[in-house]
Image (cartoon, rainbow, N blue to C red; front, side, top):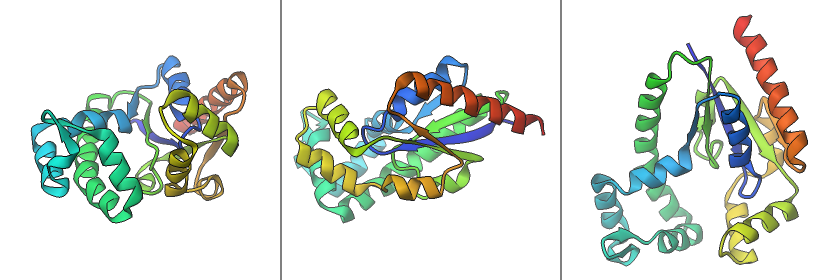
Length: 197
């Protein structure tokens, strides 16, 4: 039976890049944020989102994700309500995905809010990707149309690296990509040894 590894890190830590390193070594990856976005476009979930937020978060019957983000990052109670719609759908979808990949040795589940959601307790091991705050901010500003204030509000809505480190089995400090790739290889070696114990 596959060991399931949770991979997490704060915004701008580079966790998706790290996930791709694992994928390049043949580990199947479930990227929860991408799957959540896809599931949010389903008819059932759009109906629940409409009931929660009203028509202001729709443009031509499509979700206005920027508007939703603006609301939930300024109102924690709305974020909780949105998560109560999206998380169960992602959980069910992930279970189906695991079933499809059950013959694999290792499976990786990547999520920005692994700890915040309490979901981390369901994994065999947890890996946290960390990086200096200024590096993270610079990465997000380079990839998104965000302001520093918007990035900081997202950083502050998530656990900090010290909290993540305490609850993680492995830490990847993602500053230099070559070093990060070597760390991925080290972790895979350790996990394969643990598989055979």
